[in-house]
Image (cartoon, rainbow, N blue to C red):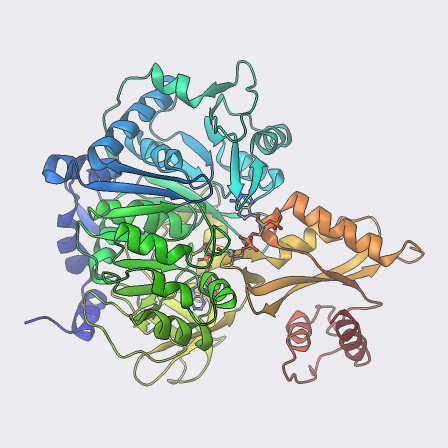
Length: 628
Ligand code: COA
Ligand code: AMP
């Protein structure tokens, strides 16, 4: 008889060692672990201590050896270049092995870092897995970030090699990558030994002699490289994510726990069996791309889809349905914003009828709050379960979900269902005391975090403790606030820090404020996230100008908008700022961003008891009204 979700969940919490120890047998180990969970140095925990494996072997070679050599491993579907290309497991293994050889020829060995700055093309996946094959540590940087953000990452992880491409294609715009790469290297203190550049025919670039190598030339002269054994606790990748300052946090993922947990999620959370086609419509630069375009589906022997396109405009709002029907997708994962975009263009879902979606059985959404309108529209239009699940770059896989492969639970609108096995989720108050069911507090996960999450931040052990573990001793702080109801359903309400979610992309308003503050005419500033029908939230800046500045406000606003685009990137979607005389503050000088946000969103707000000067708020209201 199948065990219930509650039973499996409880076992994972009561006896995590036996729970994950058993699941770990699904992975091919070169050397078995000595201890499933090393708890000898809390709050640091290590999974599968003593074990050795290779993640790339588990993603591709193993499936070739076990009878999936001719099965499609990766389908690259690119409406922007009018290309569909399929790689079997054998072909993917061979491409990865050769590129690993090329990296090795350029000096990359176990433990070295490699930055991958590429659009959603197969070579990005090949580069990631080639690093894993060598035991090198990849750090993929999303293409929508500016050169400055890339430079910060170069300085933090000090890559030996950067792998990039000549350009990306955003719907119909061709975006040159090489100038961004050159500028980033110029800005950074650290210089990589080499850059391996894939020339794309839409826009080729010139290579810097002595440093840059053409991808084709590098692979033409390379021999396939074998998988290198690494410790379960060795780093697999670093993924930078927005923190509460301009300095991004380098989330570090290990090899062993990551492989164990991610493979398990495919069947147990997504209900996907080996051999099936699974599609995460995201970008390799985000955590969803790492976990669910690349690692989890390949670990599980699935066919994964890499889509270089948008939900709309490539060519229309039927793009997702075409991909699902053409490639026989069983389960899909994307962000609610993508569905809002489709709904806006095709409210009646008329384009869905043009495609055969008979094999499509579930849609998973995450990355931001799933609004009821989008949920209902997706359910009604597609006629399949729509599963909201909640997770973060830090956790690497979901904290809460309806686990379709264990037991499909009834859906409660507005809730990503319950904490998944391994995630011991609680709601606490400021004193770290558990609150009553239904009461809002900080969502925290009791340590140890399950395998596949993050044992530390790259180069920032203290920041790991300070940011995540210090405020609620014994718990990981998710920085999301919410509640758990009497049935154990979780409701995620808002971030407790300065993070906003713009089109499913995580951004720090603090980082944007740092950019605005650097403008010579700006004395003070604040950035908040305001509700947006399409992107969920959009950043909005408030500027207080220095005394004596007499330049036109509109000119200054234009300049700060350009600065954010230049220094953070187009992905920040920072397009508006308003000049105000003063910012509302508490008597101790803290800017009341929460109150400003409520005013901007048209919500009711209470006059904060600690406000320094009540007359500032009407000024803010007027400025916002003038903007609308
Ligand atoms: N390289 C270079 N530039 C990029 C880029 C990349 N990889 N990705 C985005 N950009 C640019 C865009 O061209 C745009 O520039 P613009 O200001 O010149 O128009 C800007 O960054 C913002 O892009 P985006 O957030 O994608 O907004 P959009 O208006 O182009 O599209 C959506 C809106 C909703 C269609 C789009 O955001 C989307 O498909 N989102 C899906 C969400 C997703 O994949 N989330 C990942 C987590 S699951
Ligand atoms: P990222 O690290 O980019 O994945 O962003 C993580 C943040 O996105 C979380 O901390 C939440 O604030 C938000 N988020 C992700 N998924 C959900 C969800 N299903 N519901 C509500 N918020 C979500």
